[in-house]
Length: 111
Image (cartoon, rainbow, N blue to C red):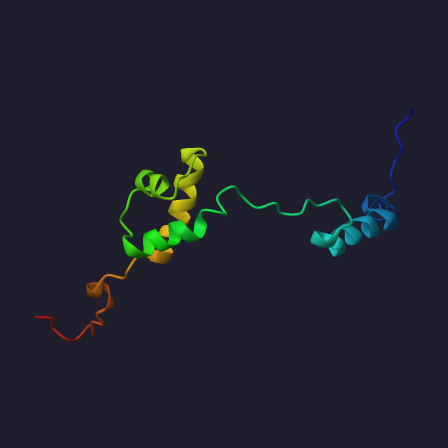
């Protein structure tokens, strides 16, 4: 095959994407997350049955370790799963530090 020589005034029209290419990309961008692709329904976690009891225990003592918490709720699954879930719940149960709630004005001296 020989090389095709482009004439200077034809070059821009031959370098642009075709209409069909643009339509395909616009259609993909428009569909976005609502494509017709198969999506699995969420199934939950084995931790879901132990969550309410773990939250109750964390509310009573938020500094309890995950291992002790797992023993108290009779967790028999993987300890890494329980530690990760307990770490997600712990910020919800921590009591705020009273010193962190002080409003300090920049021009006022705190004694």
